[in-house]
Amino acid sequence: MKCKICNGVAQIELRNHNIALCKNDFFNFFERRVSQTITRYKLFDKKDRILIAVSGGKDSLSLLYVLNKLGFNCSGLYIHLGIGEYSEMSLKKCEAFVSKYNLELNVFYVTRFFGCGIYEIAKKMKRNSCSICGIIKRYVMNRFGLEAGFNVLATGHNLDDESAQLFGSLISFDLVRLEKEKILLPGKEKALKKVKPFSLITEREIAAYCIMNGIDYIYEECPYSKGATSLVYKSALNLVEERSPGTKLRFLKGFLEKGHIFKKNEQSLEDESKYCSNCRYLTYRDMCNFCIIADRLSRKDEVRVNFLNYIEKL
Ligand code: Q46
Ligand code: ZN
Image 1 (cartoon, rainbow, N blue to C red):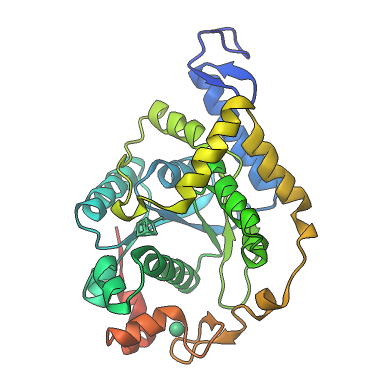
Image 2 (cartoon, rainbow, N blue to C red; image 1 turned 120 degrees about the horizontal axis):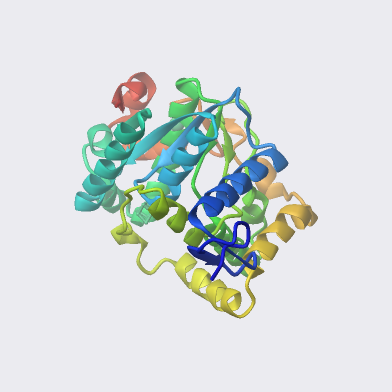
């Protein structure tokens, strides 16, 4: 197989783009597409301070790598969830990465703040681990980002994640979720602007970019991810993609261009329109979900007074 650009030996075939590329031309192709996505959807520019949520996995580490390489002002935030060996290993990958590339990493330890990890918190709250984890991660990313002076929060969600999420929302015609299926959610008072620069890049392309660049990431998935419905949607879309390469890209791009046909509905307008009585961040009830957890674990005052003291800078 030959590289379509230089005729050298191709290292990767991208059926969804109908090309094969050598290593150097793949890097150029990958980085150009990230740049084009940032420009086309007006995600951010060189003046912005970007906080990147990192997990130690390929998506988030390569996002930090490529945005730094493209000259953007960015730092990482790792949230240590207290999930045994998995959390320890992923933190080590993040630490090794930032020290290799001389980047900044901020770390929030769930166990230091709440006195126990995600699984124990979920048990006390009688909820499942992923819903508690989602509440804590969203809150910490947003609040730390705002209070530390960032104006954009970027996550490494890729085309496989985003198309599976869209598929799930369409199957149940969940209009509230469909409204949030965006590559950019604008910021407002007490809410950081949120962007997903890898939305149009596949998991396979990101893994190849990581490996070819020698970025060492954690291969293991979080133990609580097993059995997630999103994995079923991913497999279904993989089957279609196999038969018709480029389907995921067409599906998501089509939605990004025409998704406005799903009109705003009353429920979403109500969404997060009040301020939490404890921390003054946005909520749709009297107290935000994060403070409800903190209240149950007797950490309510810490949320108000000492939140930033739980972030360690490496
Ligand atoms: S939500 Fe659930 Fe993930 Fe949190 S507990 Fe693990 S699988 S890490 S994206
Ligand atoms: Zn609150």
